[in-house]
Image (cartoon, rainbow over all chains, first blue to last red; front, top):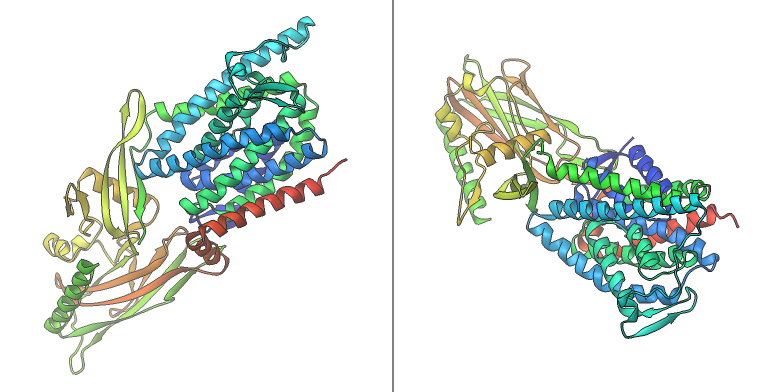
Length: 307
Length: 260
């Protein structure tokens, strides 16, 4: 069944979009991430303009994150103080990101920027995740305990001024690296149409040593606010948010996420991280392929002015 | 805007002049639908244009065979055609050319290939066919059309044709009787909204002997129109509404699938 998308100005098959929402939702529920890094490339691939995709995926991610947020909130596994500090950085990052998005679109380099950023981010994050989880799996096989949290091991950025005690996460660190992480994720989220959960969670675990109990729930605060802000900013600055597309994606996404979450609970943590790492790496390689291999058509058209 | 109006006036004057000169027949055309509505299940539409060749009062229709060209032009927009080149191993948009105020949709329909009923000079002067239609480009400070085999122009027409927004159909017009004809105007699913001009030119003996114009409108209707208008005119409110919708869906899912 075809449905005409009012902002993207293309007809799409409603069941195809629903199925994509379900599939990405399944993965997002399984790994506790928004899934934007998978949804954005898929939608671009079926022929929706990248700018509309990036803007319309934001509300969809917000919907799945809100479901996650409510679940973690009920389980009291959210560190609101840490979340608030991340938000301060995130807000600044998002505003800069939407501004850069508008600028790059004007100079015809948005597609390239999205491609390059995806390749860099996904391959770096993918390699880090795969190598870390392989090490963890090997450790577990040899019967050694996991060493995610080594007490007393502090990096230089933990000793910066403005130290703050985050009670629920039981960490005592400077807020400067917390703000910086927030800003990076907010910026990336706005430019790439990804929530950034797949990067934020590892950053919180490895850089700030936030315990696994509170890390995912707390990360949803930042990604949720980033995605809602990005939706509103994209709607006001670029008029590119397609609410119909977003709605279909949301319905597929939140349903898929429920099944994914159940499947995820049956797999061990480090195995799950290995799978996610491989997935992230594969998407990165796919983007690299597009950038390096000669395109079938060297020319493309973009609408500049619609009087 | 002024230039467009000027061109339009020129076209009208020339048209009137041409008609008086031939003064033997005139064209009467009608569309199956003057207002195409894009609703949520719009998948494209073939519009039908009907017409007859009428003799002027007191004159008779000539016996020669007629040929007909229908040119449909969509709302004018500015496009940028970009070319990729390899820079440091990756493919980057390096050069681009702006096509200023060109039709977003262009269909040229005829009853047989133009070259069989008019010479190249006539076709060029009357802008018949995709190769002859004026597609002004911004080249430095100037705006001008280039030769029809300019690589950017070729790429622009090719990409537009791939999207089925530009087309040249040499069997798009059918003569039902020697004086009654019909033409099918294909509107693809992603046809731009706005006012479309239809220009019908009648040929006999290698020259244009009559011409007329018509128009149609493509509009978004119902829900599609509502959403598109809200997004364009009330960005902030639209963004907030979309966000609230997202939170609602998230909350409903959480309530429906809650297991504790």
